[in-house]
Amino acid sequence: MKNKMKTTNRVLGISLLTLIISAGIFSCKKKDTAADQEQVNLSQAQTEGAVNVPANGGSLKGAIKGTMQTDQIYYITDNVTVNAGDTLRIKEGVKVYFKGNFGVIVRGSLVSVGTQQKPVWFTIEGKTKTDAIGSPILSDPAYQGAWGGVFGDTTTKMMIFKWTHLEFGCGPLATSPTYGMAGGNKPAYMISQVNPNGIFVLEDSWIYGGVDDPIRIQGGQVHIMRNTFEKSGGYTSGEGLNIKSGTIGNVAYNLIVGAATNGIKPSNNGGRGGITTIYAYNNTIVESGYRRSVAGRGGSINFEEGSRGKAYNNMFVNCRYGLRIIGYDASYSGNALKAADIANIAYGNNFNYVDSLNLANQIYPYPFSTKPQSSDIPAIAGWLPTNYKECYDINDKACDIYDGTSVVGKNDPLFTNFPLKQNHSFGAVAAVGLFDFHLKSSSPALNKGFTGFTPLNNVKLDPIYGATEVTPPGKDIGCYQSDGTGNKH
Image (cartoon, rainbow, N blue to C red; front, top):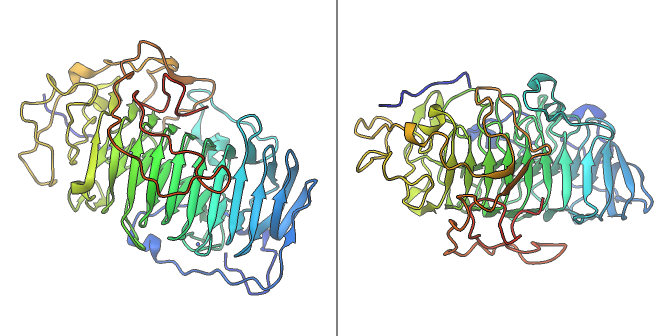
């Protein structure tokens, strides 16, 4: 039986002498086109010195630097700026509460290092989550954008987040704060990194909600490992991680649940030096891709527009599409497509579980260029046509459409606690909540990982100012390992 594709209803200008930026500046919309990069860098040098943050907490606005001390509470009452050459250090147990739609503009360095016992929080005081399955999306606080975000600029040396919660951000931007952000009351990104020479580390942290991409990386060296992403993106678009513009690094051991579009999207769109190279391995992506109103935009990992890298040992559970690799330039369902660097993308040992035929027929997304691998689960033998031919041209009439009937509901990943059968229609929302995505001892994903490659070592190792560790590829597929390594949440 042939599958019939369904098209589902799918930068703050700061004047030279300004320290306090007007309160209504922050708001977030994504355009994955060249126009996305055609933005003027409005940042200006700061002439006034920044004030040191108080040791015992308090209210903050304007230009700041120094150390937020352990267990203190700080209230952001207007936009704050870390000037070029300055550093804001945030210690364990700190709570940063935003009193409105404000943000943190980082032109120097921001280092937020919590611990497993005492994480750092960037949030709205008292705001609660709505994580019940089937909760109405339009009233969900995850998608309201209650504060702006943490915005790097072209002078940003580093942004480090370890054991840090960031939630309920992506408020609207009236005026562009930095390079790479859009004004006009479009949504912000909860974190934005734009310096091609900058360092970005996100380890063991939690990202909750958004109105578009909660994290947009446009260049630099990155290390994104062992994090949890919930409800990424907005009502109808947004990735968990949107990575482009020559960014290089590892993205591994992340749990991504309920992304609007892709969990992870490497792209070289707007390349500002180098080629986007991402090693995406041992990630678990669940129930993603259902708030994107246009078909064909993904739901798991998506390589496009000249990007390259690796994708091994990833688990995709009831995602709208499996691993999606663009192999040609074309237009598909109103989306401009540009090919990834498919000659320099290696992948395999990826796991798909689906419980509907519509999803089964997109494990290898049609009409895209992902090649089935013999190391994949489910095993390709027996359900793909003999000599199955993937598509390298949308007009290639010889590529095969396959029937995934026989793999529907097969190879249950055996999560400790998560109901697999949910509403996979447009607008469906999923969250981590109280569910447990560790694998039971009988999971078919155990001992099926590929460990025969070396991760990138592009970010220095340092317990505070670098990567704590580069966790190597795991023997089990997904972000949780039976030996206790991998994701610690």
